[in-house]
Length: 215
Image (cartoon, rainbow, N blue to C red):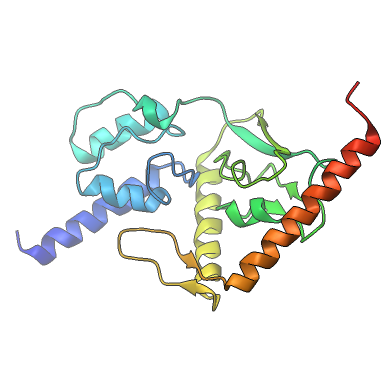
């Protein structure tokens, strides 16, 4: 098979693989989203690195790639019911770090204003947890299953967010290995963001001190 033909076949396989992935964009597979993982699987990457998809996705990828079914790679996480993020409004300091981290635009809010998670849009990726400086976000049961329509909508929001980020003058083009766009902030901007977060943390501590110890 010619190199061009092989590339076309691989791209078509990647598209079929991407179509069956859950589109949670959680990165637990080790790639920066579902599409980069799909492309990697099409090139030989393991088919068992998607915890949100669980056994059902592994079995489908097995059929698509003509590889044997294997157990989910437990180092990537475990499969379970859908959970969604919930912001503790009393503790939120409005730093916007969770908004920047959300791959599917499921969090709304403004600088120094309370943030809210749109639970109907949240994919349960948990990417908003690490950047939160006051640990005011918890994952709670969604009470529903993640559907194929949820996956399609999440992919559309993820792609729209990517286009929006790439259109920003502060973003460098992504590399060809599927890496996420790199946001280029000046030292002054980073310093200002750090000052804002530090000030917000101080206000949060003062608010907790005024309210007294938990009962």
